[in-house]
Length: 429
Ligand code: KE4
Image 1 (cartoon, rainbow, N blue to C red):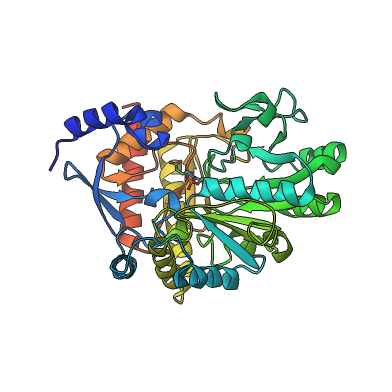
Image 2 (image 1 turned 90 degrees about the horizontal axis):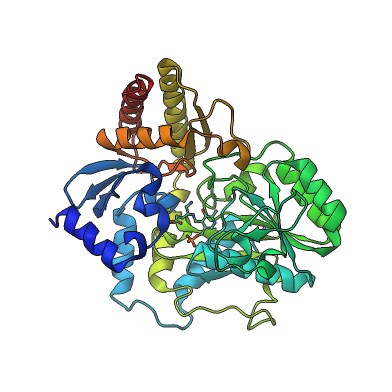
């Protein structure tokens, strides 16, 4: 077993910040990162041998938990015939059919290799299809590291965006309008002012990237109404919620049909994946059937397709989503009771098997409210839970995920650990 210390030193030497994605560095929780040796169902085993009950679940990708035999065996079986051909193969057609049959708004789909590629491509298609440049996103929503979506709100709610990171040009950001999530009035005002310029609105129908923030009633319906009236497209970023909240994702749960949907995570069963799909008249505009260029060496690769199909088969099993709803509800009510008993200002927000415990005295409905959370207290809670063998996402602004591999005992153990950790924090220990 490699010592964590030397491995972490090597990681810091060869990888920026020691990681391949920033959140994995555990900087937001002031801790050394967990370095993983293997996953086992709902558990992760670190290289130092520590076993954790895992609520990161590969940031939502692992609906069936780590190393599910039905997924792993399918990957091994397919890998024996080769890993990628860079040519059409049956499994991508099979997975495309499975998604089209599950999600009514999706008539055609294109596979890519990440959620970022999915949203980037969907935006390009929307701009091409409408001949317009402006895109609308919401503060606190994350859609991957796409230049035009790594944008902060302008000086005023109705002013165009500013680069959200060095390397994004003011020109790129200037075509993006950033509005407050759940703010129906801001949406209507933006469309009054700029409706004829807007190519698309892209939204997480249930926000997961400021922590779990559900849509308020009429928010999604308003987006559908104003985009349709203005000739703009509605893009649901269901990279997290797709096949997480049900076979038809958030759009199935809330009964809203977007024009395009972005997928990722669950549809790849833990292997690199993304996809965008929707109305046939739009998707037919994607090369080579149409002029909108998009391509990818490993797009639709058989291993990912196999892992995605195996996962969706598990999700289709009778009662799978009822089970996730039941476990999610058990965890939510247990955490709420633990918060109440500890007398700490915190709220628990959940949709299905994704939830967040916010150290906030008020419900979190948008990024502005999320930013008032006591992140130092979250960091202390994260460390306290880790000491108790429970691994939460190392950021206040992420979703916890329950998988089909989690059990009621796991949830009860989590609630007990949380109650103990919150008491410790309340004592200022
Ligand atoms: P990827 O490019 O990371 O596959 O997907 C980007 C993306 C797009 N849309 C939504 C709603 C997403 O949540 C994501 C990625 N999610 C983050 C965590 N919430 C992935 C973790 C990370 O960045 O390391």
